View 1 (spheres, rainbow, N blue to C red):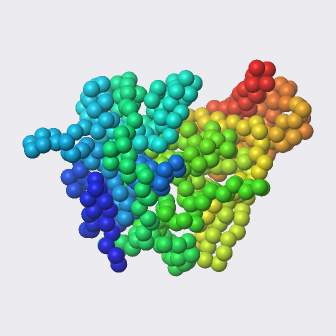
View 2: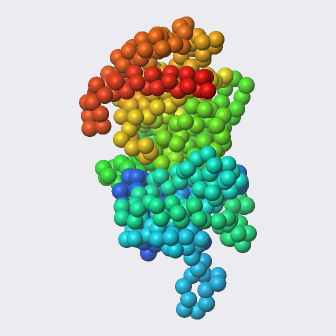
View 3: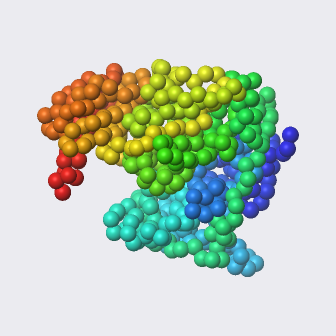
Length: 489
């Protein structure tokens, strides 16, 4: 076995003797990099945020912020990490002088963006990722003029949606974000974006009767899954990392698929768009750039930027959760999943994929290779997520619409639902109540009544069954009001 090594703040270091389940957070803190903090251990607070060099969308390399509390350190084999300590530079510091602050650190300091300081290093890293986003300044003025959540410098406040502060308050943090300038040509992290990212490496790291594996190809990975059908498959570890931290789950074998080239393609063809199962949601969002409007509505409501930097469509579908945010949208888009094993591939409509609570037709040894969305797309779309918070929250109900309306008649209606049954479901009866009828108040009100009866909602701590049913009908009425408003204006 080749020794597993990662580069932290410019210095290469082996991860041994860490256990395969050890998180990047624990690894860094054990080596004295205590700016990286544990707050929630679930990826919700951002105190553990670090920067990782990843394949770029607009440049060869992007600096991406991730939750170090969720990622196994073995998953970072061969990669480059920057912590809050690594952002400062000692290039201009003389003997006995402290390093020069990074521009985002400087702005946070002078604008009072830190009080107790516990969350500050995580904010700094998330802010630095946005600072180095290549197209941030290109659309600065247009974004600022139309959206209060973008600064005059193009800074997107949603990049900080996964970071929580409990004492300072967000106004000075926002002020610091909106004050940062543009990286200089001499900035080493800006220069790093012009070079290729670290190449994926095959990894085999075994300790204490458990092993972390990353094979070099999809075929090799599928052979491992045939031999080890009990293996836990991970990409961004945004789900499995919580199981490890909160429930102390351990696995004899973890297989990483996040760097497999065969799972990281995005192809636009004449009749479909195919999205690789291991592309992160951020990569999909930026590469599609609004080409699938329903997904463009979904992405900002899906957890936080920190989570979207690691989470994948394959992972969200693979967990089989009835409250996952992507299944309702993909159901409305009539998507299908491509399942692969050592014997070949098969394509399954997503409407037929889920069979029960966290159960699917996926067989042992199979994994999701890609998601296919047929073209053309329906022009009238909406994604409504009902939750206690606007962002970074779990859905009580999620509803996705995709409608074809021609000459005032609903020619086709597809409605995906989440949070109202043991699985994500299509609202077939409500679709039938709309199709072939005029897009008018009487039709919509009748269909909304049908939609209220769809699924089998339950009472839990997020919402009552009655509330969930009411929100289903209200969601369709809201869509009608929005589309009528758009037409009349």
